Image 1 (cartoon, rainbow, N blue to C red):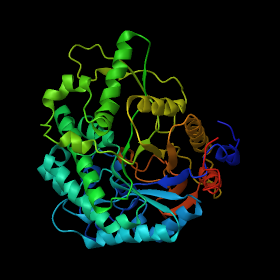
Image 2 (image 1 turned 135 degrees about the horizontal axis):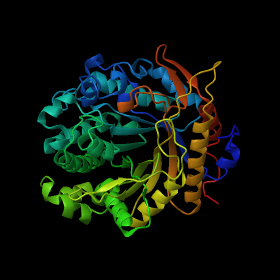
Image 3 (image 1 turned 90 degrees about the vertical axis):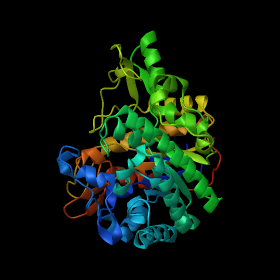
Image 4 (image 1 turned 30 degrees about the vertical axis):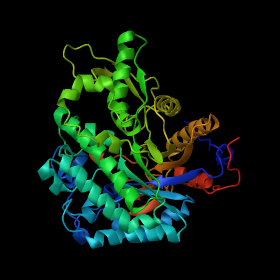
Amino acid sequence: MTDRMPDSALLAARFPGDFLFGVATAAFQIEGASKADGRKPSIWDAFANMPGRVFGRHNGDVACDHYNRLDQDLDLIASLGVQAYRFSIAWPRIYPDGTGPINEKGLDFYDRLVDGLKARGIKAFATLYHWDLPLTLAGDGGWTARSTAFAFERYARTAIARLGDRLDSVATFNEPWCSVWLSHLYGIHAPGERSMDAALHALHTTMLAHGLGVAAIREERPQLPVGIVINPTHIYPGSDSEADRAAGERAFDFHNGVFFGPIFKGAYPESFLSALGNRMPPIEDGDLALISQKLDWWGLNYYTPLRVADDPTPGAEFPATKPAPFVNPETTDIGWEIYPQALGDLIRTLNARYALPDCYITENGAAYNMGVENGVVDDQPRLDYIAEHLSVTADLIAEGYPMRGYFAWSLMDNFEWAEGYRMRFGIVHVDYETQERTIKKSGHWYKALASQFPKGNHQPE
């Protein structure tokens, strides 16, 4: 890495004038106030408070104390010159038991948040589900239970009825790969299940909840753009061997196709169904039609590619792959390979396979854990990472792909799920002892870029 500062004016010139620059967060990761104003526990509160689940037994009780520092944090967002803020709504604040009575104080908080964004001229991009399922619903099976999809539908309708008139965009779910596979198959995220059968049930319930949510949002606010945020991964086979290439295709279906297929084609991938379909929950008449309703946009969260080789072990469960080595030895502090061209390869591949609407990069960023020295956070590697991925995005726009915006992950350091507070993704540093916010070098650079938009040239060159 160098100390050079990628020229924000040169980069800005490569984007259409109406390209949207924003920052992103999620409720559980920043809000804290886990027992305030009627909120009840989510599955992440329970998971974080069990030993051996989250680094250092860190939890979300305080986090960035955003719930109590809302106005200062909205001023911080405004000071960064961005046009949009992507945040999530905490289901346990709205329906503390998942179903049952509405908690007005929870809705009041998001009223203040959205009104505060409007007052500052910042677009509001809301996500309805960013992993904080009300814990009470776990008693019915959580995401493995079909009933949860209908609880989500009611929550979505309530949130949009109250807030939808002031939102600019809404996503039903954030990264179903995580809340399905990472949470129910690999056991790394809440609820910490390690069961393919549980994961397959969670997959279809989540997809159904998305479809029910889209229908509910459209009934409440027909003009509100609705989408979903997915974290597809670009798959690179570890070699050119037939076995590894076939493993790559299976990995694509397992990691990407099980979400893109139902949403954009109305069908789960054939290879997936032939391997695991007999263990799926019943797919009822009308489910796939609901799930595949046309969307206004989709969100891409991208950080790193996936490299796979064939797992020849007899009886290896689908997708029967194992990790292949990184090509670039450079990684971020969380250990993820830095490979910006995979972002371009991913968008090209997905658009070749599916008829996709407009795309926003709803998360992109890097974990680097440098702290404050003499009032400054010199996170040059993060600045380089964001600049390189924005350069790939500009290339995609020049090729004609409908890339409409970019949200840096994250506005500020926060609770990084199973990693606790040890991994820092923010363009703003948070001192968790004092809650002091310090804009990092990357944040100052991002402000210089974002402040040049919107501008006049609404057509890419």
